[in-house]
Amino acid sequence: MAYNAVTTLASVLDRIPQDFRERISEIFVCDDASRDATHLVALGYQQTVPDLPLTVIRHERNLGYGGNQKAGYDLAIEHDLDIIVLLHGDGQYAPERLASIVEPLVRGEAEAVFGSRMMAEGGARRGGMPLYKYVGNKVLTRFENAVAGAELTEWHSGYRAYSVEALKSLPFHHNSDGFNFDTQIIIQLIDRGMRIVEVPIPTYYGDEICYVDGLGYARDVSRDVVRYRLGKMGFTPGDQGSVDAEYGLKEGEGSSHSRILELLEGLPPSKVLDLGCSSGLLSDLVRKLGHHVTGVDREAFPETLDRVDAFAVGDLEDGIPAEVGTGYDVVIAADVLEHLRHPEELMDEITRVLRPDGRLIVSVPNFGHWYPRTRTLVGAFDYDQRGILDKTHYRFFTRKSLARMVQRAGFEIRRHREVGLPFDVLSGDGGSVPTRVLRSVDKVAVSLRPTLFAYQFVWHLQRPSAPSVMSRARAVEDAQQTARS
Image (cartoon, rainbow, N blue to C red):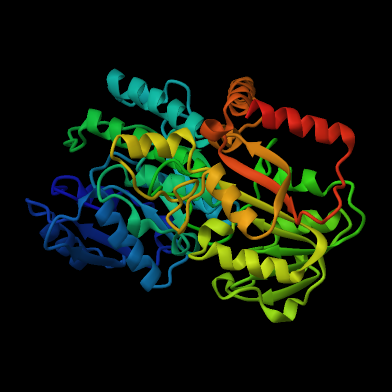
């Protein structure tokens, strides 16, 4: 990619090693509406150096640093290439290192390879990187690693290679057109568990003009990683990372799924209906407790059928599919009711398929939590990518409104569990000391005032005529918890 590179473009192309040229299928020189003769230099080079397969593109308007990359990656996808390398036309990155940049991709060891100026001790400063840029790079990289859960030596190198197949799976068109595009694509790679390999590269600072506003860039990339991490908790809209349809497993200590499994412990092998089972991650754990699980959802993921004993396709807005039958000992509606326009109708359907003495286990987010309360109070109510204000939620519940609905459906609350904030997701390390401290503080707050601090409610419901299976000790424990609430 090139912008105002009239004095450097030809020398960058000249420096591409001869023994590497035969491996190149195409070189896209993407001139981003330069104000100088960069485009003419590229056309002249195309005519005089036939051993480099140049395709010269001039954008009629400036697309920006990120927008220019999007155009180049689209070309790589359209031309069915295997690997694409981002190389700046200003000479700041060494074309001589092309072979080492692509090698991990060729060997199938990574989906992305970044050239790092920080891997060699002192190399960046010896290469002329100004002290303020060096310090800024190190500070930002450490912050981004901590927030995003990565271990990169540098987040800010513009020398990169990508598997084109991997790029196809990334929503990079949603990224910024500015210089923080590079940070956002790292976030997308991390979020999808793709492998990133770094290789050392030399640092060169010459007479090239820097178009980056340093403070603005630092603000943007810091915001991006924070939004990503908060988005994993459901506390921010439009994160750059995960927009996957699969409903993930909440594995952390004290999570809603762990609470659901806790409510199933000790039961004899039972007939279980998992409504809204998605890919069956929770169903699989329920089966491992010895139960027979039937899953229901609008479609089956490839893994779903391996994680349930039976599966029925159905939109719960239309009720529970007739083919699942009746006589269930347990029905699980984990994070389901809030996604329905008429959850009351599903409650009636559950009554039809559940045995008279069967149990219903529901989990719902708490709209009375301090986060949506604060958003509403300051006039900033909006939908988020996930969490309590998930953009796919049609109904919101407080503890009182949920209790009214289940009571009208003929159920009573036998056991209840309040779930705190998902700090494991926020920190990326559930066992760290800060995470344990935060979890402990949140746990105390939830116990003192669950209506304000509980992130989710998990309830075991049964019809009043059903015999209680609680032990006396459990009953006392629950009574005490209710009194504190």
